Length: 596
Image 1 (cartoon, one colour):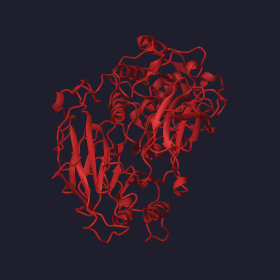
Image 2 (cartoon, rainbow, N blue to C red):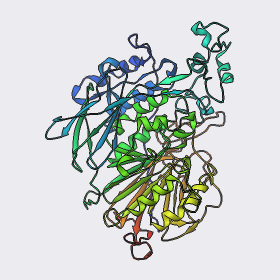
Image 3 (tube, one colour):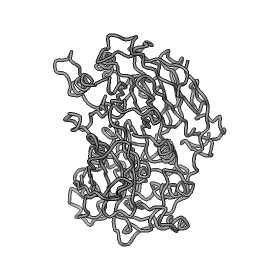
Image 4 (cartoon, helix red, strand yellow):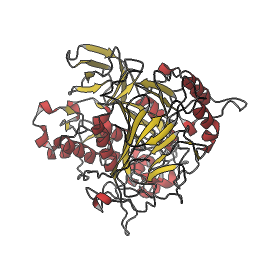
C-alpha cells in the first residue's frame, strides 16, 4: 500500500509594485522605489547582498518589482531562498547567478552582466580556505527575432496581481510602430499604427516582420565558468568577478558513494514561469536542501518575449545560485517563440560533452547511487532500431543505458518533458510516438523512474509497462505544477486508469531521497491551490492557505485526490524478481509502507 498523509503549505502573499527608471541606463530600469520601501533590510552588510533586477523599460509591467520585494520579505523571514537587495544597478554588475554540473569534480557557474568587457572569472574555495582559487571561463551573447507565439502573453489564465498581463499592447506597439524612428514612408521597414492594440494585427506568423529593425533582441553578456578539482559533499564559497556578495554551494556526492545518514536527495519540478506561485515554488525547493535540482523543462515561459528570461533568472537566483541543477528542454524552450532551444542552450548549459553526447539537449550524469539521463523526448526524432534509420536520441539512450554499472549506480532515472502516462485531458497521448519508439528500451534496461512535466498538474503512476501495471515496470511522475502563468490542468479523464496512483491539479514540487541501493522515498508537497471567481476569467492565489484553508482545492479539479496536500511513497527495487534484467542485475519496483 502507499502511505499518504496531508500537510498544509504556507504560501506568501503577492506584494505591491513600484516602477522607476535609471537615467544612467537608457536600456535598463532599476527598481529604486521598491528598494526604498525595503531600506530597513539593507542595514547589515553581513546579511549579504545580491543584484537588483534591471529590465527593459517596455517590460516594466512584468511585476519585476514584486519579484524583488517578495525576495526581500523572504530574507526578512529567514527563508533560505530569500535575499537582501543592493540599491543600484552599478553597485553589483553581476546577476542571475546559477549553478550547473560538468564532469566529475566540476561545477559550472553561469552569470549575467550588462556591461561589455566584464571578466569571466570566478574566485572560489572551501569554507576553510576562503576564495583561494580562480577559474576563468568564456562570455557569449546571442540575438533572436521576436516572435510572440503565445496568446497567454496578452491574456494569461493565471494572475499574479489582478490580471496584469506579461506583454501589454503598448510594449509590443513600441516595436511594431517603426514610424517613431523617423523612417521615410516609402521604406519597406516603415509601419505606422493608430492604436497599440493594432500591433498584434501586424505580425508575420506571430513574429515582428523581419524587415522591422526593432524586431530583434540581443541578450546581455552570458558568462560561463567551470570550477574544477572539487571534492564531493563539500561546501565551497565563490564569487564572480565584480559581484558584491560571496555565495556558497555544496557539491553532490561522488557517483557510487552512499552515506546512510546523509542520503542523496533530488528536488524535482517543471513548468515554472514567473508568477507569485513560481516564486514560492522556488522557496519550497530552496527549503528542501537538495543535493541536485532536476528541472524537467519549461523554465521561464518567455514565449517569444525574451526579456522574461531576465526576470526568470533574477527570480530563481537565490535557489539556483546555491544548489546545483540539471535540466531538460521543454516545448516552451523549443517551440514557443520559435526559439529552438537557443535561450536554453546559451543560458543553462548541460554536461552533454562530458557524457559522450553530441547534442546539448541529451546527456547523462551520475551522482551517489543514481544515474540520470536527460532527453529532448518528443522535441527531437525518436525512431528506434526498427526504423530505416534510428534516431540519434535512441542511439544515445541505448548506448548510455548499456554502459550503466548497476553495482555502482543501481537507480536509473530518465527525464524528458512530454509524459507518456498522463490521465489528464491536457496533452493526452501527445508523446505516444516517443513511447512507441522507446518504452521497450527503457523497460528492458530496467529504468526505475521517469520524470516529466508539460501537464500543469501532478500525477504519479504505479510501476507500469504498456498501460498495464507491472511490478517490473517503470514509475512515471509528472511534476508540471511549479506555477507558470497558463494555470492548472484541472480536468482529469474518468475513471482514473488502473496504472494511475495519485493525481491532483494543484501546484507543488517533489523530492526523491535515495536511501540505499534498494529503497528510495518519493514525496510531493502541495504548495498552492488556485481559485477562479465567477466574475473573473483568470485564476488567483488569494489567501495564505487558499480560499478553503488546509483543505483547499483548485477550482475545477475533478481528481480523487484534489484536497490532499501530500503524496509520499517508498519505492523498493526487488533485484531478484526480474532476472532478465541482468545489466548487471535485474530490478523490480514495488510500493510498500513508508520506510525512512
